[in-house]
Image 1 (cartoon, rainbow, N blue to C red):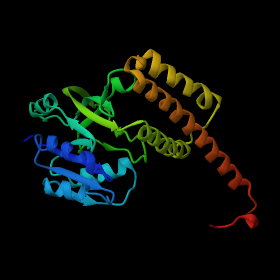
Image 2: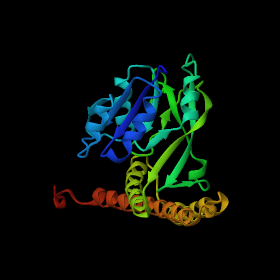
Image 3: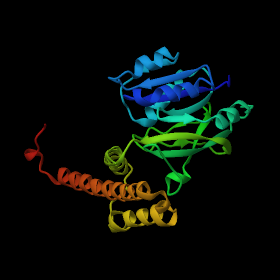
Image 4: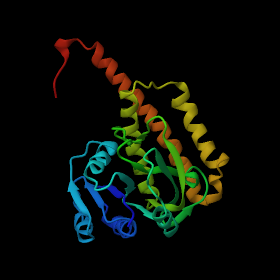
Length: 265
């Protein structure tokens, strides 16, 4: 086994998590599940397969991943989502690592699926993320959405062989629902970070995102699924900045509302 811990955050992932854990068990003897009180069979599957299972309140993607990092047996952390499955080449690549330099982080290439179809082009076809790091130097930011790793100065990155297979969405409906959900979270994040809605990001940025995904990155070569992804990318970009504009307007109304007219709900 590789001396690393795998951390997975979950919420009702019974459909996917079995295969994820099966591949993870070929890598390590320490798999930590941080669960947001699933109501399906997620807990039974995880415990039956020998994972360490913890239920926690939801404090955001980055914050909950950091909870798992604290509980890990090893300092080296491989961060996974429940719908991600390491292929054999990636597993062998992990087994070949010395893991003797905590300044190094490891980047993993992804193969993403729309339903059962592998998406080869567009933004999904270029997907890769840093997923293996040493917790003595690196942790997740506490952002509620689109969490990123906080990498200190002097960090070196290496690309691993193999792929993480990401079964992102089952169909158009799920893809659209996720786009709406992440748009709202992104708007809240932008508001907290002081980012403003303007003409460029309200109208031009969504159009450019569609053109980049569908035309420049060759998304049209993925057929109907490529078009669906490009359209939903456009919708997500459009929505998050219009949600941000609403939140900004709401803040202005609160700021200028006379105290005697304010009502607590």
